[in-house]
Structures are given as C-alpha cells and as structure tokens.
Image 1 (cartoon, rainbow, N blue to C red):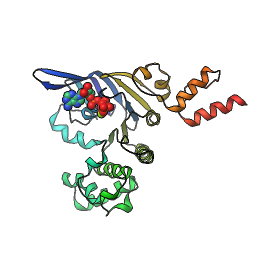
Image 2: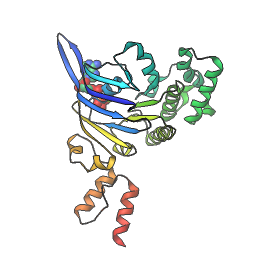
Image 3: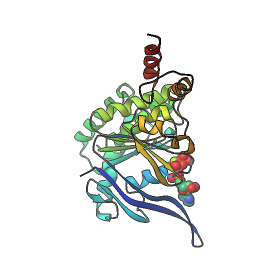
Image 4: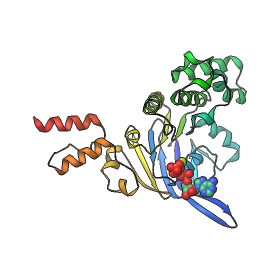
Length: 277
Ligand SMILES: Nc1ncnc2c1ncn2[C@@H]1O[C@H](COP(=O)(O)OP(=O)(O)OP(=O)(O)O)[C@@H](O)[C@H]1O
Ligand SMILES: [Mg+2]
C-alpha cells in the first residue's frame, strides 16, 4: 500500500455568489514511504492547495486523498493525518510561536499532551536533527532566515511525523539558507521520512527522486529529474531548467554528446571532459 494516494482529486475554492475557482483537476498519483518528491509548477498551478489536501487541512471537492490507508474525508482520522504529515511553510517569521527556541520546538508536543520527560527527549532529538542544539535557550529573534526555518522544521519533527511537506520553505532565504534547508531535508529523508518539497527552483527539484509538475491544476509530468528535464513540456509549464541542464542542451546543439539528460554540474563537467579525451 502506498503511503500517500491521490485518486482523481479535484479542488475548487468557493469565491462567493455561487462562483468558484478550480485549483486542482483530476490529479492522481501515489508516493511510497521514504520517497523524496519535488512538486513544481508556476504560480497558481495548485501546489499549495495540493499540500493542504495532503495533510487533511482541505478535503477534496471530488476524489480521495488517502494517507496510510486513512481517507482525509474521515473526520475521526483528521488528527492522526495531521500528525503524520507535518508542514513547513514559506515565511520563517510566521511560524514561530515562542521567543525561546526550545519552547517553540516544544509547542506542538506540549499541545498533544506528551509527558514532560518524553517531550524533553523529543525536543532534544529534533534540535539535533536540524543542527540547532547549541541555540536551544536563545531567542529566535536573532537567528538568520535559514536558522529560523530549521527551528520550524524541528517543531514539526517534535511531532514525530512520517511525512514532511515543505511549501516553498527555501524561497525567502539566501543561497546559504536554502542549502541548509535542502541539506536538512535530504538528511531527514535518509532517515526514512517521506519528503514532499514544493519548489520553483529546478536545482532543488533535481535533488529529488521524482518530480511532479502541475500546470493549471493538472498533473502534466511525473518522473525522475532526468525524465522531466528531457521533456519539452517543462518550459511550457513555465519552469526554467537547471543551469547545468540548459548549458548541456546548448552544447549538444553545437555537437557535444552527453550520455542522457544532464541534471547537475557534476554530470555536465563529466560530459564535457569525456569529449576532449
Ligand atoms: N483562498 C483562495 N480563494 C480563492 N482562490 C484561491 C485561494 N487560494 C488559492 N486560490 C486559487 O487557486 C489556484 C491554485 O492556487 P495555489 O495557491 O494552490 O497555487 P500555487 O501553485 O501554490 O501558487 P504559488 O506558486 O503562487 O504559491 C490559483 O488560481 C489561486 O488563485
Ligand atoms: Mg503556493
């Protein structure tokens, strides 16, 4: 059984007076436990709507979202689903609930009624996992954007989720902060947590096992980074290819030969070096 299953999911926002906006149309896919999936698409393509359907914040207008066998329509399961699928949002400043970092991380488990001793352990493990242990008793206000996002991730981890959904969690950060967050996401994934990373950045998407591309609420591509970047559809979806992929494509037009689609700098360099030998 897949961990996440979407079956013909559509979602419309009611905008009043009988009017509505169709944000998702007939989207189906499944995700196995431990996968790292990037979800890409232009502004308004339905990514955040999909994220909210995955953790049961929204219920589909049609179709079903099933998380570990639990249908998000089943109200008795809403709580379990939200705990299983944690969300990290875009703005690091909007996710802080307490001024002191360890209190912020403890907020979720505290609300769950986790016993004090276990809570301390959870906060400990969560801060370790994001490399913020030494900041534990400090105030959040002096942290960089990347550090604040790491604290937000620790807050989600303290709830012991099996799935983490990042909704453009790097988009407000500088390159260093972005790298910190992607690094944490990769490490969590290596520990078995399923990662769904929503991003506009194709270099980030290239780090995933699989990329799903949405366009106007429909799923248009679903494959490995190599498969997706090789598709002419990518640019039609308003997505820029990773610079290395773009460069390899230009070089191919000038007679260079690459072994399949290039997805990162390393493959580009290898490809170029192999020509001169
Ligand atoms: N609360 C809302 N009420 C009405 N329409 C909405 C609402 N939220 C989103 N929409 C519409 O639903 C569609 C999908 O929006 P969504 O936020 O899911 O896209 P997105 O891919 O996350 O975009 P972005 O890249 O800008 O974050 C868009 O047409 C958007 O205008
Ligand atoms: Mg969005």
